[in-house]
Length: 115
Image (cartoon, rainbow, N blue to C red; front, side, top):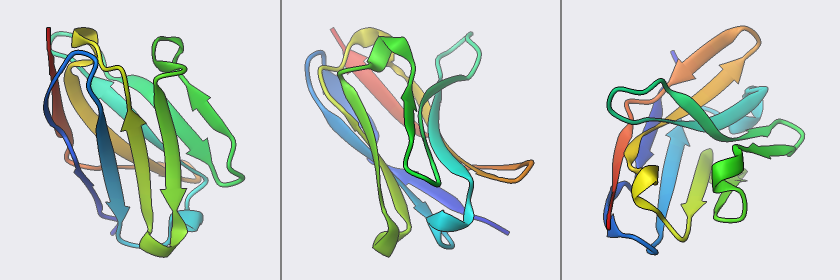
């Protein structure tokens, strides 16, 4: 069973920064891709950013230039650096790992951006 543990969420003022971490229970290179999703109250879960095994990254338009996804294979960890945060970034952020057709999810970490 794969475990993904997110950390790094919290309360920050608009314009501030946070770095989220997602620690996997096994090598991150065993997954075809890993990504960050978010879900705000009353809204559907949406992709924020992901990174493929080959290192290709993808971002939703609203976070391009502000967020950056990265990984550290030695720590089996994927990061999401979030800069210039906006109130509309407020959500629970989830880490996902995809292995073939199976998705594994973390428990989520709350990010709240105050105006």
